[in-house]
Image (cartoon, rainbow, N blue to C red):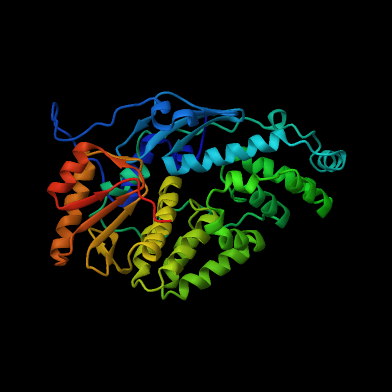
Length: 417
């Protein structure tokens, strides 16, 4: 089966280790029969997502496992089977699948079909033309975020360390493909094989003339509104990605980050990391720019640059966006601070703030060690304003209880927009 994101490339078990690594922490052994820590139990996908557990061209397989940070999904589609790690990346995949469904249902006129046949050499029938993606080894039982937390007190890797060879190469995505992707509300640089193939085919057909590309857009009334639920807040980013080539985007992001007084080695390590799409890097850079009054942004980017899994890269992107939203819409932030090797943010009220895009936080051994490590670091640096943890997902009762014992305030299902 093909893997999406991190899980796709490295397997589920290693993935769990990697979110801990991304956050910096490895699982600790749990004594037999101990009830101090939780072991996340498998659950039916319908109990998590209701009717979204299946759609016109996909179905989430039962059961869904978790490492106490992110959920591990297996999704069966018309285009093959894929692994997806985490609710945030699942949202991306479901949006992409919705776009593929619309593409399959398009009723285009003879001019488009003629151009498509000429350019691609086949009819507009994706189900017949797509090949099942190659199998990729499963990551196992721990996500990259889980791994991130496992290694919190270990020495931080250098920016870009561990990045796959050749990751600095940029795919040449033409303007036609970028325009088509924008109108379907998807990333033109998506790492989802079926979507990447379909966008490539459509853009090749569109090369026959602007009128042909125009036909594909004219056939999509309301697509942007139906797929891109946050279009109003991301229009500038969408236009930037649409109007610039990959090389231009990379140069743009480099200038933006260096203007934040981030050293060149850190910037280049981040831009060379293949686990980010160029769109992810642009979104993360734009979010850091929105934190213009927050000092020491280099600490955040240095950690983001070491992402060694797809879900970890997306985790850092979402964390940057959430922090920017918090800064602009809830309460002003002051500066980034390293605690046990992980960048936290200090608020104007001197509280230490953590915002995580996790699914359901369970009180596992490695989370407990990570929290205690952060507490020791905060106490050593004599920050006394308290610790606030904001989660896009939820936390178990045991996790809430233990966070409270350790003087953390926990807020769940947060939105700052």
